[in-house]
Structure formats: structure tokens, C-alpha cells
Image 1: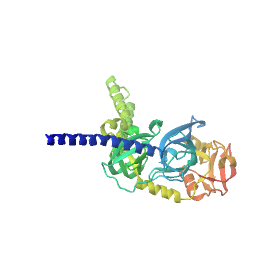
Image 2: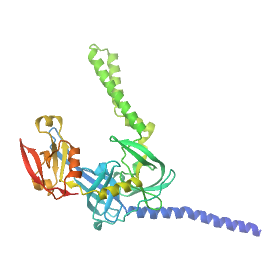
Image 3: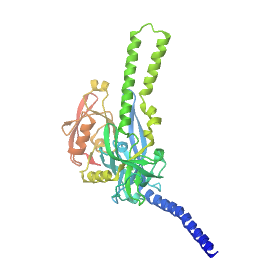
Image 4: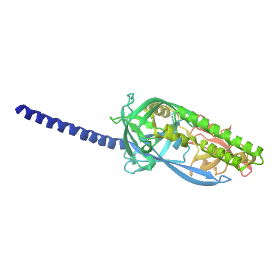
Length: 388
């Protein structure tokens, strides 16, 4: 009898301990989420969009993404493709405090951007990078702002590592694959381990495995060939029977579907259902390189390449879309729709040339000559680039 009583008591105690474990785990997760949200921010990037035949209709579009504070000096990490070229960038913390951000620089190879904010106006705590290498099965937590829903927290795990992806003509290697709901994560989101250290940063959704990208390219090529053949047959056969017309229309319809292969492949390959992240090792190297690099020159303008009709009417250069008020270009007398022909005696025929000048040649604070084309004549201006 005594033995039975002892067994019952032991069972009750064990049951109580086991019942406490899920509660303790949940409490730890709640505390971890609170701590990480103090490092995460929503990022807002504003750019000017032009439209119309003469490209003079302008309106401002703001996109939201995510980021996080990576040091005590106010440096914010986010994805480069969303903030590069933006005329205005700002961040918002968990408490709703907002602050303007400046772009320190971008690392195109890893699609990483480094911003800087005045943390005196924000309630933020910097987060450390993890030194560990995580394998499949490691638990992680993501804090981001999908669809503008600030600081959404999702728990999941690493489902793969060293993934090679492609996107926008670039190859990204060493990426992490995450088992998290993609619609609940946002590019630039903070990916941390269960100790609250950075594992990675959520990558843009357009990145795809090579097999998906290659299949999409093949289907698009087939679609274009089918449309060309359909047009040739349509022109060649003058007296088309109703049956022939129906077949040609069917070919064009199916080819039209193949032009957008991501819609066809999504249910089969599920590429859009996978979340990828830039690993912390790549993030650390990107931050170190960007902080070492000299300050990038800034003109305070947004530009775009010329269209074909413009190229026939204007000297070759870049069309000025927007001039930031009180920026270097504004002070120098640059106006929207001017054509930027040269800067510091170097022709600016394409955006990459201008970007290279700003990053490698021009020095903030040093005045140089700018040549523009306005209303049928060239003008020479003196401009003193600022720093970003």
C-alpha cells in the first residue's frame, strides 16, 4: 500500500514538472520576442515615379520594409534593392517613434544596405551577431513588418543552408533557407537564434533557386517563339477557316500564359512558399566593408536614362527627375528635366558611370564642374557634393 502511495505521489510530481515545461518555454519565447522587438524597425523608402509620354508626371511612392539596429552608433541593416535610389528614408521603432535615415552605403553583391539614424530619437537596443554556424533543425525567430504590420514575430527553424539563388541577373550563394510562413516575414527582417543573436536577415522575395529561374526563362522563350510563329502563320494564310482561327487563338492564349511562368510554377514548385535569409557571416563582412569605405558623394538628385525618342532629340546624358530641396544640385541651380551631360569632366551617359563617380571619384566638400543641357543650350554649373 505504501509503495502504491509513493508511486502516485511521484506521478503527481512528475506530471506537475512536465506541465510547467511548456509554460516555461512559452514564457521564454515571450521575453525573447520583447527583447528582439527593441532592436527591429520598420523602414520606409520614398522615391519619385514618372509617367506619361514626356515623362514629366511625377508622384511619390513609399514602400515599407524591415531592418534592425546592429550597433550603438545608430547603424541600421536592411536590403539594398528597396532603399537604393530613394529620395527619402525613415525608420520607426516599436513605440512609434520615427526618425529620418541616411544611406551610408550598399553592398550589391549581398543586397545589403547600411543606414544611419540618430538613436536619441528612438527607443532601440543594438543586437549582436551570432558566431555560430546553424544547421537544419536549429530554432530561429523572425521579427519583421510584413504589409506594414510592424514587428510581427514568427518562430520557425533553419531548414537548409548554403543555398545558391538567382535574382535580377545576380547569383547569391551561402543563403539560409527558413521554415517560416513567407507571408508573415518581410525583406530586411531580423532573423535571430533562441539566445537573441543575429542569424541572418530576410532576403527579398524575388530570389529563386536556379532550377526555377531556368525553367521560367525556358517557358518564356517558348512563349515568344509560339507568338512569332502564330503571327507568321496568320499573315501567310489569308483565307483562314473558323477552325484555323480557333487554333491560332488557342496558341496565342496558351503562349500568353507561358509569358508569366511564375503563376504556372507556383503551385508545382512552391518557390514563393520558401523564405530565404542572408547569413550573419555575410552581414558582418558587409557592415565592416561599408564602414571602412570613404563617404559617398551625394548630389541630391534622382535621374533616369533617356528613352529612344529622347535620345534622338537630346544630347546623350541622364534626365534629372527630382532635385532635393537645399541639396547640392538645388544650390547649384539644377532643375527637373535638365539633362546631366558630365560631372568633373567625365561624361555621364549611363547610371553606372554616375554611380561610380559618386562612390570612387568625387569627394564631399570639393567643388567640381557640372555640365547640363536645358532648353536647347548647354550650361556649366559649379556644384559641391555633400556626403551621405
